[in-house]
Length: 161
Ligand code: PNS
Image (cartoon, rainbow, N blue to C red; front, side, top):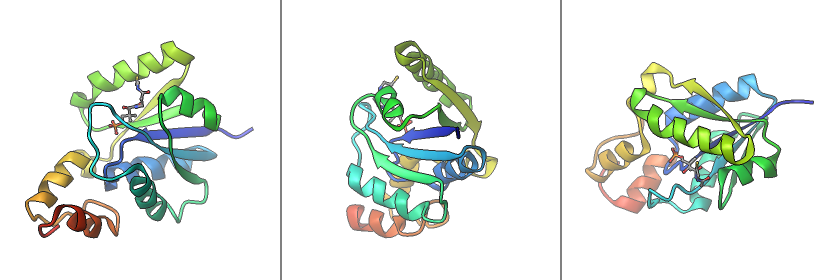
């Protein structure tokens, strides 16, 4: 039986850093489910449907990747899709504290294992929050996000994204 990885995140919006992890996971697992979830610490700019649509367009060329939104706990999403592992990217040591806490909580709650992949160095500075900040002040983010995202940011925020 093949291995399924769940790549969870807020993806508000997806960046090239997220896609780097998704593409690399898709090469190593039989199936990848990209799970759009809510992080209670964040108030998203895009709806879950918009975030799913962006990811579907960006992963259209990856036949073993599916995208879906989930409400509630990550461990319930993992069970729902039959994921063997959760895969997340780590950009720097600053990500580590929050990520290890979540990984250990998910393991304690439901025995869900998390594997971390190191983000490719070219994207290690990138975050959805910074992309939104740059776009909000009119900066060009087109080299940092999948096609279609700068237009959506411009629509939502105004400015010269
Ligand atoms: O892209 P992010 O913001 O780092 O992703 C965080 C996310 C959405 C994976 C996390 O907030 C999450 O798992 N949310 C679902 C609710 C949940 O399970 N919370 C407990 C986590 S231990």
